[in-house]
Image 1 (cartoon, rainbow, N blue to C red):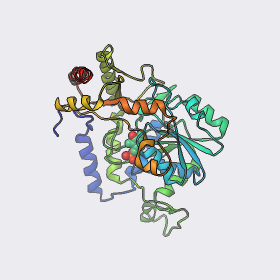
Image 2: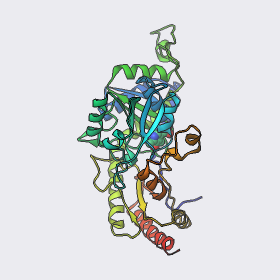
Image 3: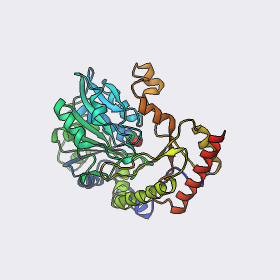
Length: 383
Ligand SMILES: *Cc1c(COP(=O)(O)O)cnc(C)c1O
């Protein structure tokens, strides 16, 4: 399919090409100086003492929970309106994901109240997701976690560069997890980052990333160490130098690109302000968002698949973020869903429509999407 306007488009250019070429010329392809430098620069962005680079955000979520001693018998609260990896990471640890509903049809994040509603004596941690790059109300959520002695993991896959009260997301909880998958606000192809101010968590996460080994290949190469022990059942979750080089080339562009996303979202909002048959959530966001997704909530009774088909015919790619995790077969088979408590989450899952958003999108492309959307909704309403 050759889209006139795709859902997303990564921004890649000469800087990325040169960065990758330098790695190839250096002949050191994994876990070297570039990864260390990328970690240090990303830690500064998030205002954290430690950053651990991994080969995905999924890996970051997994080792974050392990480093917080989440295991069998524990419950971890998370939203169901998220990418499946959030909840899968909980299941990898043998723990049980317990789904909290979103705050409202206006704010699609979990809230203190929605977390409180599903907490039990077995709750060990909460894993919040900053949906679409819109920050969760972190001060209230941290206050709640503190009263119950719960750890907090932020799935900040959508939110690099977003802040609450001037403080970056991924630096509020015990651990922050970021994704550099191709469609995220910054990309390394595949990749992830774990951020934390806790030395114990960073130390354990670095070992789990590399088979639970006590020394690194680079240390042995440099002659700092001859042998190693294995002290944890670890994984191979390492980031390659090629990915780290891409990440370093992308990092300086992140804030300008997030600002451009904000402008495009503003234009969408203005264009769609009085459009019939839809509403736009997050009208008054918490903090300063990263604007990863632009989503609309279609009116009840509008046939979403008809709208999507009409837009596809006009060359415009749309998507659904997300089908709620508790409705998937794997979750049903494991006795984890579907949950009839999640009324708002399920209403959103049935009616959400994701529209194109990426920094190189033009104002006239936004106008075109809105024009086609309004026409497609009118057609789907009459039918
Ligand atoms: C993309 C995404 C992930 C997974 O990231 P990967 O780097 O692809 O593993 C996790 N959570 C959310 C909310 C995501 O959007």
